[in-house]
Length: 605
Image 1 (cartoon, rainbow, N blue to C red):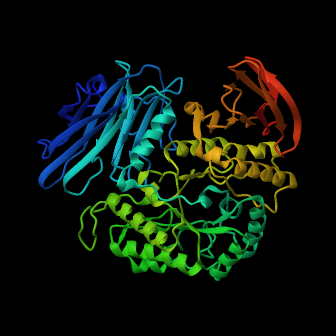
Image 2 (image 1 turned 60 degrees about the vertical axis):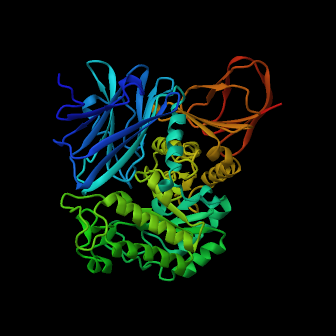
Image 3 (image 1 turned 120 degrees about the vertical axis):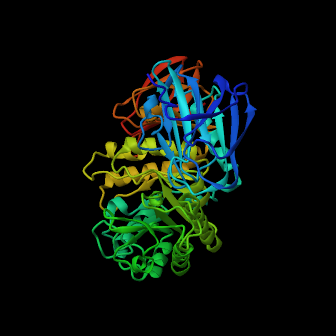
């Protein structure tokens, strides 16, 4: 059988043979002869952690076909693969899939892969310093030898001519939990001046109300102000007004985007003031790349588009034109000044890509040849313009655009749309938490059928406890018991948010959608259990809250130490105290009945 990893590639250079595990890295190309001078450096940062830097240089501007870096690790104790792409599964990929696993660029994913073992141990995590240009990352099993062949492919997409390119790769072989390796990648990116994360104000880490699932485009100032009155009393301190405020069209398309005049809310300034009077902040939604075919902007900027989407009935604008960037920056800055907004939900950034007929030059008024750097410039300019007006401005992005470039330009990352899907929401917010550092990670807006039982409706909340809640139901139309549940768990979340958001996070079972999650501070531990699993209690924390986020009532505890006495309280999902006792737990197993979507709190005596 042919070697799929290097078939069709010409060998260039081998690096790190005596410095890196498993015989180092091989570099291949599809350009013969290769027209760049290739140099490299291998640094050992600590035992099992390395940084490899390669540099391509030429005396004049040149181009190249793809360049591929390949290295291997043995597939021993290998259980799965962690990717930033929310659409991926956690399987072991075959070698023939390894070149299609992950694509990363400015506004699409993050260049990192983590291979983990059956005990959630890191086997090998690798990440790239270049989060702007298009990279392809992969790690696939070769059946003949049982090894995983990792690869990074540069210049897979056509690129403009260049004379220098540098890339560093972080290689982590340390035997530790996989979460720690991902956190190291996140801090590595954040340490780079070009990716310094944006300031995160406190309001970004308080619950928010979103209009999208509850109203879609059918919004009025009257209905939203009524929602704000209720939401504010429940602890939701920001409303995100989604698509619909800018147009009277309700066809769920984007044919009327681009001008951003508040047709449906003609007195936006007064509406914002009324929201502020209710002790709430307000954010507005914008689809950044779209100029709808019925907009004035579409006519004004014809010829400066990357593509026209029949699906969206809108053009995808080209950020390489300075007048396009100026238009967008000015649009948001003027909205902020004129309406006194508190934040922006900037959507669809991942549509900034080169299309089949995109010319990668600086001709015809373009000041960038490549798309990625132009998107970086656009979003950086937006961030700088908005923070100059209001330093604590909120800027939200959602999966797929969650990499280090967007951490620099935004302070809220939200899970991608998954309405009424509690398990998917849980997985997506935990994925974001593991890679986002102190950036505020938000759930997708959770909602449920209003006839749902309160216990099952509560699961929508409990699956996203380790993120900032965004709720999207009509709070004035849900039942009294549903509202009591929302009130109880919102109060609980606000009281415990420091532990939930800022303490040490352990997410067991990435292959199983994280069925057991723990957040541990010095004094307190909060655990959510989503399947019938044994929960280990170490006795290290004086306070332990265990949330029963599953549909059976048995909570099985395994105590490591003997004779620990707790004051135990059991609550249902409405906050009713249904059990209160002093329990002395012996070493070994114990079973406690906790209502579905309820919790038990343990306080050491």
